[in-house]
Length: 400
Image 1 (cartoon, one colour):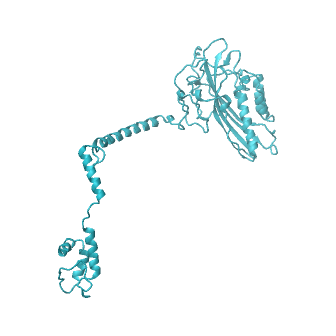
Image 2: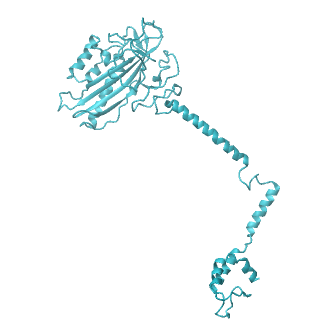
Image 3: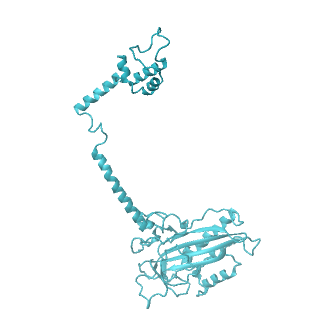
């Protein structure tokens, strides 16, 4: 029996016995021996003890082991449950084939939907927040986030609708803009251009007050003198201030108060309600010398009706770009706490051209057409992505 066991494990011990046999000068003669030589065996044993120990360990590892009693019990219980039909179908082989096939069908469908989504966004990137122009989905009813950077495109078209006294901003991209002064949000002030944080904060506050009194104050809109705005401007800058004051008292093409102030003739036009829609931003940077330069770019949308009892509503859109500066009184002949005007441009959508009487003249859909087409181009008054510097053209608004 020992010889038989030896033969069965010979393949597994070839790396031990082959070198041993090859190293013997005489042929190895196998005899029936016990698993380990007895104590009285000759010290000149033909097989060393360490070889017998390796052989015994290998033989023990190769011998089959009988399952434990617990393993036999579990196996028998599973066999009986399977015979009674208590185990789910396919418990030995994993999920059914139908589920695998269903999974294979879902992935192509998801891939197709993703491809369609990418194509739609590529054709109209404004569908994604933060890309393109303003999102104008008026159905959401949510106010747009404040403008923090220059738009890269005009706002998308709103759903067609006719403005009414109850809903004067229907069909307008401005429907989701901020109301009035709430849309003039100041950036956080910080020291710049040799000015302290407090001085910069004052310059920003004055800019906001100038915009509000010039474009949102109901008294200014109906033609009253904008005293607050005039009081903010640098009195020593006589050219600008003189032109504005002259325009308020005696408007002309040269001295036009509309260059800085928004006004509607109360004898013919009144605003609808108390809300003017506002969108834009204010930024600042270091100016020349010891100064802080403030840049303001805002668009205001005014719903109006005639004062003859008509209920027809239209809108005039006015965009203003201002560049203002607060300089150091120690270095320049300026007044502390006043704003010096470096630039003031405006562009108006839906107002009759060629009239210089100091009022905006909104055009209504029912107005009779003029004798000839407008000499200027058709422009989008809601487009805030383009500069309006030196804009002198008098054209047609593509939408109101």
